[in-house]
Image 1: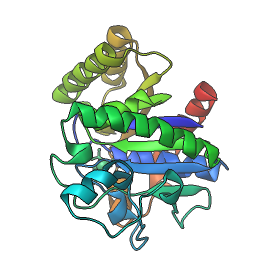
Image 2 (image 1 turned 30 degrees about the vertical axis):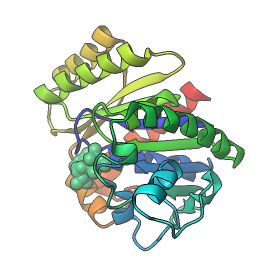
Image 3 (image 1 turned 180 degrees about the vertical axis):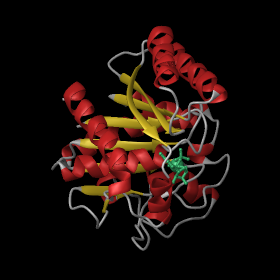
Length: 269
Ligand SMILES: Nc1ncnc2c1ncn2[C@@H]1O[C@H](COP(=O)(O)OP(=O)(O)O)[C@@H](O)[C@H]1O
Ligand SMILES: [Mg+2]
């Protein structure tokens, strides 16, 4: 099983859109895929996949004891990793794990407590191996933006990280800072990192796009895996919970997702 983490410096860059469409594309190619909403600050799977009502969420795995003690949340049995995935109902090969819809700020996975996160990392590593036993080929994680301990833990277990950005001045500067910080903390050992430029304004000169790509390649040795233009059809589809986008006007988006999936398949397996 390969773990692919979608991360970004800022929110709103398109992490969830790209993570879910990539997951669907893997599933359609016949790979057993599990997508986890690990963006605890702003969980979104729930509003995209309406009506699935999972018994357990990603947080439950890490916060069970804390919740029991601090929130008197005694209603549930202690969950095991295998209890979390639910089928997406849109693709047989795609399972999902939701995040708590009203997370408590500063609590559990949203806390800054390094001891808690050291324990959570151990649990995450065990969880990864349980998911591997369940037969998943790909585990896709949609994280909280910026540097936070829960997202760093996800990057630690990743085989690949896709860093999504909107190419403007602060997007490029912020992402450069983020990657440098990740490298100084974790290095690049065993992990492949890629850039995705998303919401690129149509008709942006190719020369400029090449410059951005060169910047990340030369400064940080990070390759670009996808360039996605801003496309209102994509936004509209996401709004109505329609993921992979196959209408004529969204062909370019589907093509880029396909290329990303083929490259990941080639580089990781
Ligand atoms: N290529 C794109 N073109 C147009 N809108 C996009 C594109 N990618 C994402 N969006 C829209 O941008 C918003 C933020 O995307 P989202 O995936 O939720 O970002 P994040 O998960 O990084 O916060 C959503 O409304 C989404 O539909
Ligand atoms: Mg998101």
